[in-house]
Length: 123
Image (cartoon, rainbow, N blue to C red; front, side, top):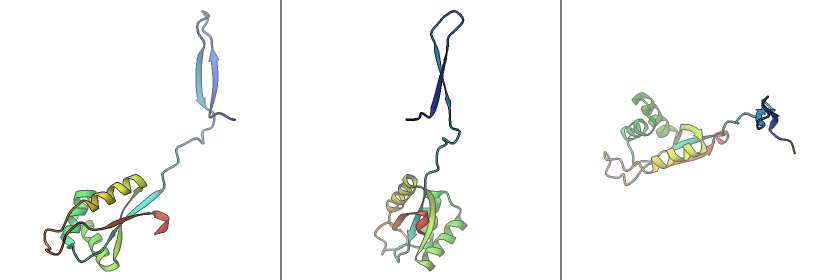
């Protein structure tokens, strides 16, 4: 079995205790980036553009213009990629969308919008 580290020891001139030094033997031992996941917002007829814009500002700190563009994409295409991150953060953002609540501007709105988390390679 090979070790990531090489060890060396030294002894002080006075004969004191040996000190172990560890150095990385392989500079390629860097952290790999986590695979990306998309948060996809799904269209419905129970939420207004204003709701989407507000949600994008509150949950993602997106500008009004960016929120409006995403709302338009969701409306026209039935879905939109709204965020990309590692899996745990993407799932957190999806869960925040699911807890955001109903659209107060529409009586027909009874809950939050729906979103999916999918591997970025799947879209």
